[in-house]
Structure formats: C-alpha cells, structure tokens
Length: 472
Image (cartoon, rainbow, N blue to C red; front, side, top):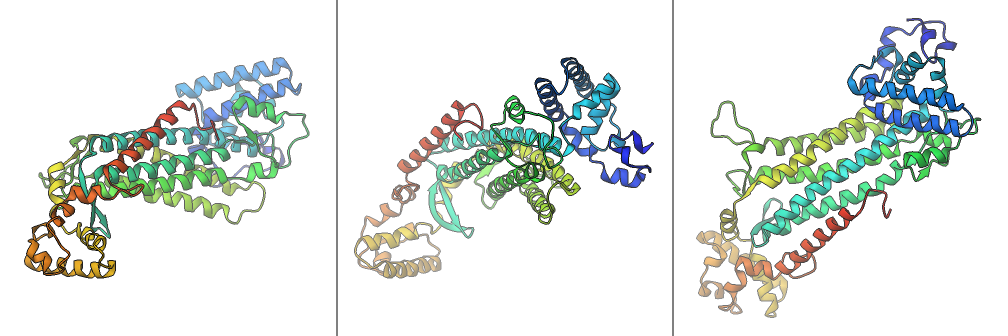
C-alpha cells in the first residue's frame, strides 16, 4: 500500500514495514470503541455546524455517512482494514469512501489524541455504571441471605482458628459493607471519568472557534479538562477504575475463599447448588467449587492490569505518547473480568444451601466461648488478666479431658475459681454469648437488625437515584 493513502501519510515517502504496521496497530482491541467513537464524532460535527465551521449541508452529509457506518458496524459488514491502524482511522476512512472528500472534514479541529481520550471517557462512564449495578445486585443477594438466616449462629474465626460465635447474618453483612465501600469508591471515580477532553487537539488546543462546552453538554459531561495538555496525557481515570476494581476483587476473592472452605467436608457449612459447581473426570463423588476458585484466581489478572498501567505511565513526558495505547487492553480485560464475576457470584450465593444443623453443632463443639468465661469473672470483680489466666487453665484442662467448656461440671469450674456459679452455664450458651455483644456494630441480634435496616436503607436510597452523577 502506498504510504500516502494513509490519512497521515503526506509527510512520508516510504511505506511502513509490515512488521511495524502490525506492531503499532491497535485495531484488534480498540475496535470495541466504535459506538463511543461514533457518538463523539456526531457531537463534534454538530458543534462544527453550530459554530459555522462546517456548512449545514456538510454536517448533514457527514451525519448521514456516520449512520451508514453505524449500520455496517452493527451488521458486521464493516470492512476493517489493519493498515488504518485503529478504529478511529478506520471509521474516518470508510466515511470518506461512502460520502466523498467531505468526510475528511469530520476531523476538523480535533486530533486523534483528544478523540481517543473522549472515547475512553465515554466507555469508562458506562463501565462504571455497569460495575456499580453489578455490585448493587450482589449486595441485594447478600442482604437477602442475611435476612433469611438471622437466627443462625456461626463460628467466627481469627487466624482461621475458632474465635467467637457470631450470627451468620453478621458475617455476611461484613461483605455487604465491604461492597458498599466499593460502590462509594466507584461513585467518586465517576467524577474523573466525567471530564470532557475533546477540543484539546493534539495538545495545544485549536485555532478554530469551537465550543467545547456545547459538546460536553450534548455528551452529558458535567465538567471539562481545564488544560489541553492534561486532557490528552491524563489516564488517571483509568487508573482509578483499575484500583477500584482491584479492591473489589480483593473482597470478592476473600468471599470466594470462604465459600471454598465452607463447602469442604471438613467445614460442611454450606452446599453449593449443582448449577454452580463442577465434577471430576475421574472421581465420581467430587463436587468442586470451580466458580469460587476462578473468582479467586481471576483476581490476579485484575491486580496485574493495575500494575501494568501504573508502570506504563510512571515515566512518560507530556503530552501524548504511543505508550498510552497500552491502556485499553488493561481496562477492557479488567472490565470484562469484573462484569463477569459479579453476576456469577450473585448466582452462586443465591442458590447455595446453608447447613444450619452443622453450624449449630459447630458452635457447641469448640472453645470459642472461652472469652465469655474471662468476661464472666471480670464482671465479678476478678482483674481481667487474672481472669484470662484462669480461663486458659480451664481450657487446657478441658482439652486434656476431651471435653468442651459446657461439658465441665460446676465442681470442675470451681476448682479453678470460687467465683464460678450455676449461672455460668447459661452465660456460656452460644445464643447467650452472641446476645451479649451489644456494642454498636456487634453481633447481638438487635445490633445485627440495625445493620440489616441500614443495609436495606442504603439499597432503597440507591434505587431512588437515577445515576452515578446524582448528589455527587
């Protein structure tokens, strides 16, 4: 192909080496931005018409041509050509093929630098909306599970060792409020996605009498970049989304890990629905938590995408550099991953069976009520450190005898301290242990009901809002 047939080829006398052409092309991945590219181009050409930069007839021809291009893209008949490097040049070249030289006027007063940045902002706003919706749907599932299992007591852990009994609803709500912070982070990240870069040109702006505010208003942006150099070199908005996604995946991976543990024979706290588990090709008895494992595994690629883009940006001089072409695959992959993980986690949780009998057995066959023994003594005037030591000796004794704390007789308890009385046994019952934790945010039923009410109110308030921009 003659280099001069390229849209930027006037300065060149040689054709690009095929190896370089393939290496520099981004068409294989940025073609998914065609909708955003058309949306931005329509707003741009209408502004050019309003400003008298293009005639009404030219505007009408270009808009008609863009509609033809859109139909080809929608039906899969669009002739993608790698020699045009990216989706932006492919659309512009095809537009000129369809309507003639006037198609070249579409690019008046803009550069691919601000055009690409605009497409990315338009794309990211949609991704943030979809991610937020996915988080909300998962929170609704978690809230429903917590409401359904309010009376179920669950062995709480620290260091993956039995620690203190809690309500299962309390444990689930910990994930609800993690996800709430994820949602709030996305709301804040939206502010940076909601900046309009078009009109910055290559880096210095343009001498044409454009109206950036008109374009921003038409495209639904509430703010514009104040500095044209910043507008084309900035990728903070992508970094923020990648960070938000990475933290979200941390939370989902932690939940996935617990699901893997809970579904084992050793724990036996839940059973996964057959629709969200897989079997073994050789061991017919197996029911594997593959969905949860893959959620846990895919977290690594999201982390990697964040680190990759941070690394791309760390040494770039202003303004635009082709290194920035590396941003899209990182964000596309992260968005695809997160938007696949959220609904599958919602499905897994909404269909799993909680084994209440096994949980009831678990909270009676451990030593997680030992803290209550120390508290019992402290409330009777024994200094807590002394109470802690007495309790530790009682636990060691019970272990040696193969008993649980509730199995010890009153005489055995009193051998450790005369402060022990018959009321100790009611004090150590799992339900009593849970009910005693009445501090704000604690696991007592009345406190968990408050958390459920707060969670339900957050979701109800969100349903009343129309989008991420409201009440920013």
